[in-house]
Amino acid sequence: MAEVSKPRTDWRPIEEIAEKLGVHPDNLERYGRYKAKIDLRQALEGGREPGRLILVTAMTPTPAGEGKTTTAIGLTDALNNLGRKTAAALREPSLGPVFGMKGGATGGGRAHVVPSDEINLHFTGDIHAITSAHNLLAAMVDNHVQFEGACGLLDATNVTWRRALDMNDRSLRSIVTGIGETFNGIALESGFDITAASEIMAIFCLARDLKDLKDRLGRIQIGYASDGKPVTAARIKAQGAMTALLKDAIRPNLVQTLEGSPAFVHGGPFANIAHGTNSVIATNMALHLADYVVTECGFASDLGAEKYFDIVVRTGSVPPPSAVVIVATLRSLKFHGGTKLDALNAENPDAIARGFDNLRKHIEIVRTYGLLAVVALNKFPSDTAAEEKLFADLCRGERVRFAPSDVFGRGGEGGRALAEEVLRVVDEGPRDFKFLYPLEMPLADKISEIAVKVYGAGRAVLEAKARRKLQKYENDGFGQVPVCIAKTQYSLSDNAKALGRPRDFTVTVTDASLSAGAGFVVAHCGEIMTMPGLPKTPAAERIDVTEDGEITGILG
Image: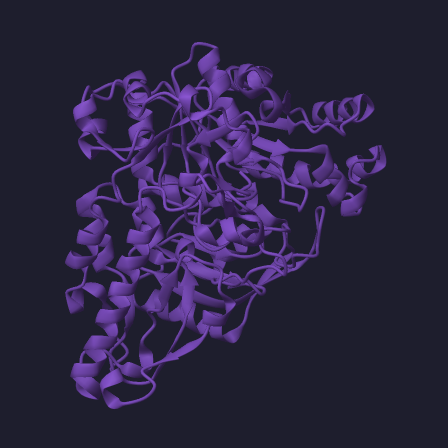
C-alpha cells in the first residue's frame, strides 16, 4: 500500500537518482522534486555497451495476487545492494485498474516506486496525451466523413477507428455518434476502448524514436474506401498533429524505488489485449545507462512474455533477456490446485502439488524460447516450512533454478537470494533464443502455433468473421506480421474458469483487428473485452484525500 512508503524527506531529489546513471541535469525535464523526463539523446551519448536485460513474468494470475511488479522492483534493489549498477523499466499504471478491481501498479510494501500516488494517477500526463492523440484521429475521421460525404476517400460504413478513454466504463463499449441535427455529424456506430488497449499506446511503446513514432502513426488503418482499399491516418493528414501531442510524452520518465534505485516508468499497454510491456525507448535507454535492467511484462508468460519475445524483440530495439524470472506464490499454487479463495492461508500440500502443474507449464513456455528461468517464490506470512520444502522439491524435480523472495517485507535485502540466483544465470552467457514462428507463416497458422505450443491447446478454431478478416489482412499485404492474441489472463486457455493446466482444449478466435502502425494483427479469443467494466465494489470507493491533501486508499 502507498501508506507504507518512507516519508518524502527520505526520498532523494531526482537529480541524485539521475546522477547514479550518469545523466546530466541539463538532460532532465523536472516534474516536481521526484519525477523527471529524460531527453531522448541521452541514450546515444557515451557509446557504452548495453547492459543485461532481466525479464520478470509470472504464473497464471489469481485473485490472491502474485506480486510480479513488487518482485521486479525488489530485485532491482537487491542487485544494486550487491554492487551491480541496475535500473528498473516498468509500465505506467492505467486509471482503469487503479479505480477498478486491481488497484495501483507501483509495487508494494518495502518494494515499490515513488511517488506512488502520483505515478498511479496523472504522473507526467503520458497516458492523457495518448488518449488525446487517439481521439484527435477519431475526430478527424468523423470530420472527413462529414465534409466529404459518400463520395469521399473514406466509406462511412467502413470506418474502423474507435475512441479511447483511460477508465473502466462498460457503457461506452458500443455507441452511436452523430445523433440529432445534421450539423452534429453523420450517425455512425462506434465505441470506446480503454487507452491501454489503444493502438496509439502500442505504437508509443514500440516506436524507436520520434520519427519512427510519426511514421507508425501515419500507417494506422482507419477504415476502407468504397472500393475496399484500406485508408490510413496519413491519407487524412493526421499523423503530424498526433505526433505533436506525443512529442513530450515519448521521453522516458525517471523515478526511484524506496531504496533509491533508478526506475524508468513509461508506457502501459495491457498484456491480455495488447503486447503488455513498457516502451522500447525507455528499456533501450536504461540498457545504455545501467549494467543490468529489470523489466516486467503483463500477466503470465503465456501473455506478456510470449508477446515480448514474438513482438517486442522482433522490433530489433531491445534484446532477448539474459534471464527470465517467473513469480509464484504458494497461495496461487493452492488456488490453481482447487483451493477456495477463503482457505488459501491454511496448509495444503496436496493443493500445492496439483497447482504446481500450472507453474510447470510456464517454465516450459520460457524454455520453448531457448531461455533459462528462475522461479521466485514470493513469500507470504501464511507460508509454512513444510510447504516451502515441497515447493523446493518440486522445482528440483523440474531442474529449474528457484529462490525465495521477501522483498515486500524486507526490500532489497529480502531479494538477495533471488538476485544471486539470477546473476548465476546471467553470467552463464548468451542463450539460444529463438522465435516461436517465422513471419512468413500464414496468420492462422501463427495463431495455432501460439495456442498449441504456448497455451497447450489441442487446436485453434477460427470463427467465420475472424477467418474473413485474417484473409483480407493477408490480401492487403499484412500477412507477414506477428500476431497479438487477446484472451483472458486468468487461464492458459481462453476460458477464465479453466484453472491449473488445462489440456486438449480448443482456442476459439471470435474476431480479429489490424494494428498496422503497431505492426501486428490482434486475434480476439473468447469473451475478451477491450473496454473493461468496474467491479461491484470498485477500488475507487476506498480512495480519498485528507484535509492536508494526502491521497489515501490506493493499493500498490
